[in-house]
Amino acid sequence: MGRRVVVTGLGICAPNGVGLGDFTEAMITGKSGIRFDSRLQELEFGCQIAGEPVVTDKLLNTYFTPLQL
Image (tube, rainbow, N blue to C red):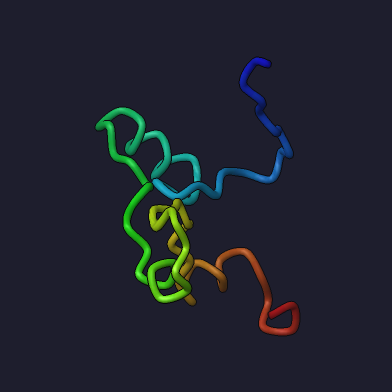
């Protein structure tokens, strides 16, 4: 099976960058968003590495109104 890609048209929300500019910079510089996740260790998962986008309150307020949040 080949690699799968989902195109939503909603922008980029990836572990190594949220938004086109941050994601492009991460791709150019080789920045990975995959890292150790202590929560998975606490839950005793066999695999304790994951990729999770960093979403701050400032970033949320860029895309959503207070009513939506």
